[in-house]
Amino acid sequence: MIEIFNIFYLTIGLTLIFLFPSKVIFNSLKNTNNDLFEILSINVILVLNLFLILSFLRLNLIYVFCIFAFLGLLNFILFYKSILIKRNYLFLIFLFFSIMLSFKIALNPKMDWDASVIWIFKAKNFYDGFSFSNLSNVPGVVAYPHLGTYGWGLLWKNSLVDYEYTGRIFYIYIYLISIFFLVNRFNLSFITKITAIFLLTILTFDHSLFSGYQESLMFALIIILFETARKANNFNNLNIFHFLCILNANLILWVKNEGFVWLLIILIYFLIHKKYNSKIKILYSLSFILLIVIKFLVFNFYFKESLIGWKGYEFIAVSQIFSLEILQRLPVLIYQLIQVFFKYPIYLIFLLLNLYLLFIKKISYENKLFFLLFVLNCCLSLSIFYFTTDPLWQFHASVGLDRMLYQTSGIYLFIILNMLNKHFVKV
Image (cartoon, rainbow, N blue to C red; front, side, top):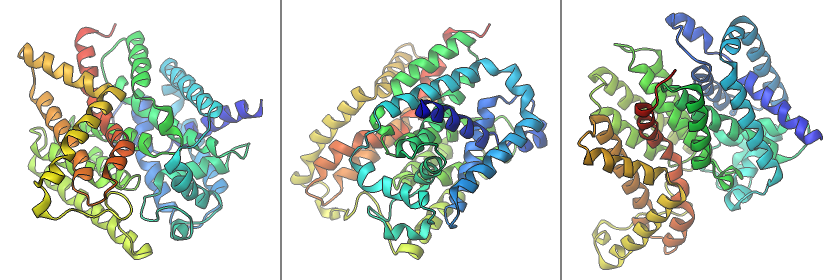
């Protein structure tokens, strides 16, 4: 009974934490068309950046939790009551989904391999009150980023029961915020929204990835980044949402090491997109590169470590790229890529929809850009395993390629929902 009550308590705590502080931004913009999930998504960006800063300090996580929850409660009292009253039905559905998925984790709290030998120790570091600098003293790979495990440790520390799985509710909550935020941006009826959310959750919820991995957090942040960028395009000039995109990009770097690869792909998308003027493109280019350099310098300053791929990863010589021995990897990698498409059907649905649009000759500029993004995504993901000298490259691809592609799969949900939007009109 106490575990059931604990899940409700932690869900309420997370709601309070992520109700702070973006209402001030909307007030400054005189924007009255925002919805609760847009507010929560922006608060995810702001709060996680604050968590990142706090992770470098040695703090009691009970105090951190209480302060953020209090600020959220205060913000709710001052600004949010009317929004919750007007739009409480979808938010109640959100809370229901969050609690049900948390129960699912509680019923099967087993951690998978990387989580049990790497990520749990980073979470325990913050749970025990240590800071970022102490990560060199815990088991695992010191060069792996830590932001997700800070949230894991924070919730675990403030749980009413001392079980590590309670901290992983943090990942579920943010994952669902991204799904609801994406769906709620479309002009769909209430029933259609619930149906779409239910189907997308079935498509994207992988229980194993909530066993301590960081992929679900990356999945959510990339969705929020793209949807925030769309919001930024509603304004003619440089605005606060462009800077929120930059803050979101910063988070992506501190969740997984491959975050810098995703940022480069996303930057290419922004650079070739017609909706972004030259000033915005320069801003994104300089900001993304600067963020990558800062993250590299921080890890070198604290740990003398930086990492691409996995521990001990080395690139093959340029002269070997087209050798027969290396080219033989391609059929194996392509086969594993096809397996990923069936494991996460978002990719198959995306490809089928693009073929359909091409067949009826209604493929838009936006669809073409997303398809280019898809090709870059797949090629760069495969290249990590193609260009390594590690004789165990096939093993690493078999256990890592699916998780890498899952991180960016949320991007293609937009095309799927866009098709739904053409067939269902809000009533």
